[in-house]
Image (cartoon, rainbow, N blue to C red; front, side, top):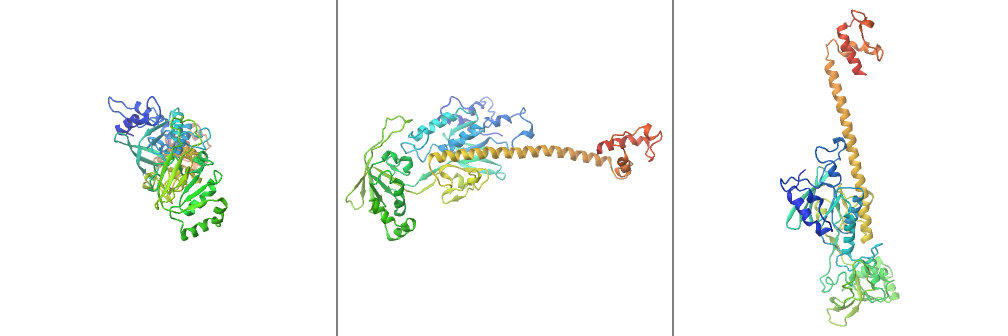
Length: 475
């Protein structure tokens, strides 16, 4: 298997962007004198390279550049990489450097890392994973995943920085491509996303406890979201942006019977005016804080203005329910089905998709759970399943290879036997059948036990050696 020079050069030239490391194993395999290339010699791939490799019967089911390629370097992708590194799988992770939670100040509810910045979390994970010798992390964008030979392996195309196009083969693909939020065009929402305007109260709510809160969502979603943040503070305003209509009220009642009474009991009010803008009045961030440590509380302040120009509303933080979409089209273009807008993944099959050999983990898959601890879980789950599946495939191939060898030997023996027993030949099995049946198992036809002129059956002594060999062969 050969790969273009750009593949090796690209991997080595971008590795420093993805993790701290002195040298790339990939780059070490490039012989600049004769451009003799080997596609990624880490882990198990090294074992089978060259004339000095193991016997074919012990080779893997499919010999590819990698056991697995992981697309995406967020929490899910890194967790999958770590799990596969632990069992010395030969894996490449290609990371575009684009993350859904990148705008967020801090990542929370992560045991041992609560409150660190998302960038620090990724940095710490990469640093630890870099101690394993069979995996590589590179910066790049995967542009296509192409199934080969009935999904027995895949060709992965990617673009590396510097306009370097590369391709690799891999036995399995793990899609950790994530989602992206579809933010409304209201001025101030995109600018403050993740910095006072949040999606998840578990991820960012505690830092704004006992502060004036707002919910940005359609009426039916805003009402049901109240129950998620009520323990943080009861001063809540629902900014439903004109969606408080009779039709939407009926939809809301179907989802949450008695919701109007509930809002009155909790003193939650609905603001139905159309939003004009959200303006930051105070930044609650700590710009020079240690990224490895949490910071709380955070005292932001925003002003909400409406199209009518009347009576703006002040809030310290918001929780929003906006739609999202797949960050990458690589999965669907490879044939992965969508459940709604999520990559179809089988929870009982290690999160494999409808395309055998392609797995979907993290926010992008259809289990509809979106948080960092769950992303870690899905990555590890797929890593375990993928590793075992590879060895199952290897075992089937190795057993089959051993069986084919035995079958080949038996076939050769049958051919020899047929040639030795051509019809009409004096030594044909039909002529000597009785002799074979009545002969003692280890007896030897000799002059002493057949007589000087032959046996009682009339077989000439000159033929007896051939008969003997046939009987020995038939045992």
